[in-house]
Length: 321
Image 1 (tube, rainbow, N blue to C red):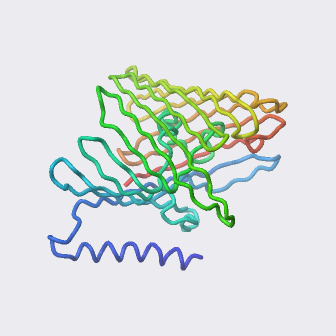
Image 2: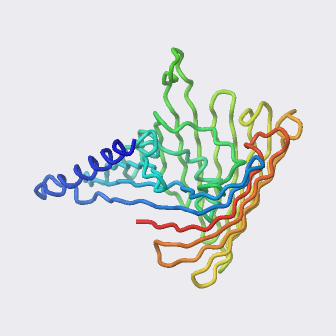
């Protein structure tokens, strides 16, 4: 497994080296390599057992670029792979985090490929400020309805700070089955006006669907945000309401974070309520590197819709490149 992983990364970088050696007329000089390594040492308690371990928090490496086609048109691409710096292993689907080609201009942007729900980015992810909604302190109560692969999307230009993106996936055979999986639909809207930032997202996958609205406001050193989500037939049959509030206070290079979520009863399922909270501190060593610590706790109902009670005390480092 380790040899296969090394071979994959070695092949990618060897290919990039060959491109760099091409004549200027053939080389893609505007390709950007980026990534994030994000690890924590954690003391976790789940199911009555406590363990100390090294935790990966959605580390990744990616490549993106664009070509000016003239006349206001641009073609672009983005490839992103997840991996664990704890073990060095790549995710099972190598470009599973993102693999898309796009065409943009004055009309907006058309995207084709595999990418994360914009309804999620416009709501839950937007207010998860302390660790970018990754790792053990990520939002355990948000209902993620969309599918990422085989997706076509259109994003409008920005009109007075507002933009909209609509996406649908195509019918594809489910693994090991003959019937085709029905398409999913995803709609997101974002609006920014100075310190006020608003968003909304809707997603549908068969009988499962969700709608959420989000607000975030910046007031000097304080940032406060939150979202409300109403979903149906996701964690269990029936409807449910999920609410989350978050806040950040910054002073010099230090950020103090609080994040609280509450999921109500899911349909007729008894004891299906749950709540989650996180307290965190981030310290910026530079624009790209942070040291941070947090305590997070999930109190699940007896129905266990969210995987059971869980808590973690963590210290970590996050480096972007």
